[in-house]
Structures are given as C-alpha cells and as structure tokens.
Image (tube, rainbow, N blue to C red; front, side):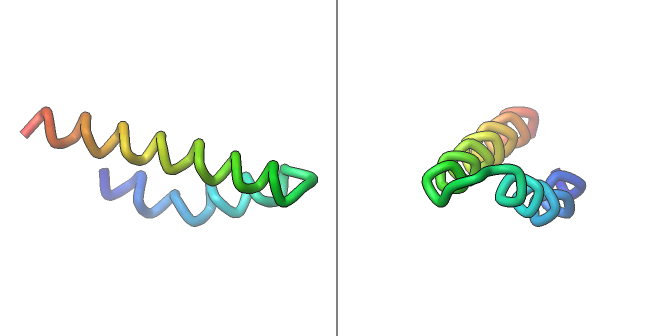
Length: 47
C-alpha cells in the first residue's frame, strides 16, 4: 500500500501528460482515484 502511495504522484503526472484535453485529464485523474480507492478497500479487507 505504501508503495502505491509513493507511486501515485508519478502516475498522476504521467496520466496528465498523456492526455490532450482538460476533460481527458479529468477522466484520467478520476480513473486513478477509483484505482486507489479499490486498492485501499483490498488492503483493508486483508487486515
């Protein structure tokens, strides 16, 4: 989990750099948020 949090800023930067429009950036960031939420739920379920 900690590793994912360390990589999150890099992943967000890559997502923003890869998209061509502000709307695309919004979708990319939203998708990243969903992924982080799912990872968090998975980590909590393992506790």
